[in-house]
Amino acid sequence: MPTCPVCAYPKLEEPPHAPSGGGSYEICPCCGFQFGVDDDDKGITFDQAREKWVKGGMKWHSKGIKAPKIWDGAKQLEGLKTAKPPAKKHK
Ligand SMILES: [Zn+2]
Image (tube, rainbow, N blue to C red; front, side, top):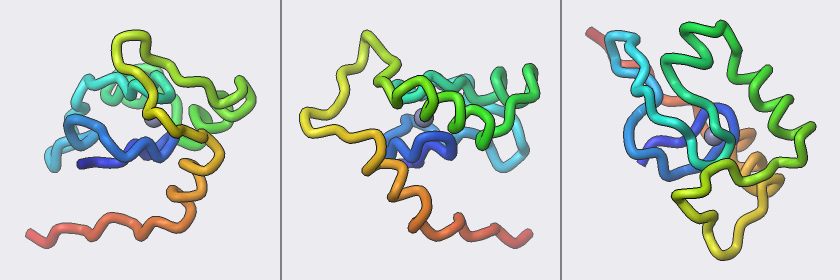
């Protein structure tokens, strides 16, 4: 499953952006970032969104989707730092 580039939540339904560049319009249940809207329309970078989320106390965003039973936002972010960048596809 795709990982959220903002908060490192590892279970997004779809990749944040299609290979063509279009956003998924999925809202990350963890940080609330909406791909294709917050980034493409509002011009918020993943780094800016992450900073805001961290400053806000790394709260779980979604009310419809529950946070995993054992969930630690800070620990999750560690995964983002250590994760390998996604391999680029060659045409
Ligand atoms: Zn997220």
